[in-house]
Each structure stands twice: as structure tokens, then as C-alpha cells.
Image 1: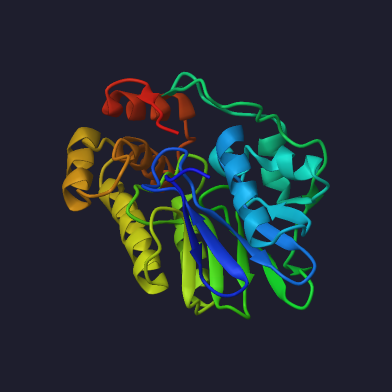
Image 2 (image 1 turned 30 degrees about the vertical axis):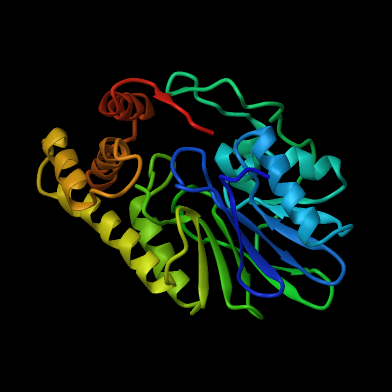
Length: 297
């Protein structure tokens, strides 16, 4: 396992697996272990990092079979799913995530510079989760819960471990990292965040970044998403450059601030009822970053 990863036990049965600082393709994952088997929550962006994750699970729960739930279809969370399937474990996904993952892998070479992906071909077989589903790990259970709205993506899942008070939010929550809204709907995302509050979690594992209090983490993302919508509502032709500068000033410590350029355009399309043109949105983000983004993963 790399020194760049942080294994954080949250209880005797539930563990968070963090990849600081949480920027591009450095997602968080984790697992829930019972007497008989393990439920892994997400994988990693590269074959190497996903193998590090699976090695950490094996050290924590030796010999127990592992299944995985993918909170959504983005490659940083999903690219290692085939490794779980090839070991005999189930891969649990929403219907929308199935479509995204099966059409991949998506490495977006026009936006990112990187050559170390390894073998990240998608799994051949998955199990579809369309309603709240109980995972029995042997003596203890976790709940895989579909998000009813289009939020970060069109098929987000969260994992709730009620016995431990732990909620794995996937990318519904970013911590210290600029959220990314290009495959979702911001108003639906805000609705999903309100629903997360109902779990009353003691611990919330965000999709990216450090663990903070659940209330603090949800509030920070909610504030940002409301700012996006409010910033573009009053005019058909906003000054995106000025708004991006405002975002950078308001959240100066967040990683990946070029995402403001994309998110503001997503918000504008949503507020004014326009179809989202993903090409110009991504081009604006790449321009904000000064060119294609060199990945450090």
C-alpha cells in the first residue's frame, strides 16, 4: 500500500480509505466487514491503486470474499471494479452507472495527461440496484440506497451502515475539493444533500477529501451549489470569468478550482432551461486550468 493512502477505522466493522489530498482521480473508498464477507464501497482510478485498496481489505479481513458497490460511474470510483468481479465478488451498480461503466473505460485524454492507468476494462457482469437493498455481511448489515434525483450523476448510490452510524456519500459530498457537476443536475443535488441529513450519521465519508463532521461537510457543498445557481440566475449572459474569480476567492483552499468554470456553465444551462453542451463546458474548464491537466495518481 502506498504511503499516499490513509486507512481510517471508523468502527470495529467499518473503515474509510482516503487518498489525500482528494483532487482529480484521488477518490475515497472504504469497506464494511461482517463475519462472512466484505462490502467494498468504490474502487480507484488505476489498476495499481485499486490493487492497493484490495490489499488493504485483505489485511483487515483476511480470507473473506469481497463484493463492491459503485456509488456512481466516474472512473476514479469505478475503474477497479473488474478486479473484484474476477475474484468472484458481485459488482452492485445503479442502471445509470451500469450504462456509464460498461461503455468505458473513460480516461478523457483531451482533458487529462496520464499514461499509468493499467488494465481498467469494465467488468462483464454486474448486479443492478434499483431500490434500497440490504447487504448481509454475516451478523451485520449495510444498506445500499439509490438517490431518487439526478444529483452528482444520474445514478448515485449511497451506502449506510446503521449499526455504526457511517454514511458513504460518494461524490454527493466533496470535502476541501471543488465539486464537479458536469454529469448531474444541481437542483437535484441540493435535494439529495437534504436527504443525507435524514440519516443523522455520526461519520460521513465524502467522495473526495478529508473526513469532517457530517453537518459541516453537507453544509459546505450545499452553500457552493446554491452559489452556482444564484450567480447565473439574473442574466442570460453572465460574466463567467468574473464569477470564476469570485469562486476562487470565496473558496481559496479548495483543490481543482478550474471546475468553477465548468460548474457555472452547467448551472446556467439548468437555470435557463438550455441543453447542456458538454464540449464547450469541458473546453472552458481546460482553458481555466491552463491546458490539459497533468494527473498525479
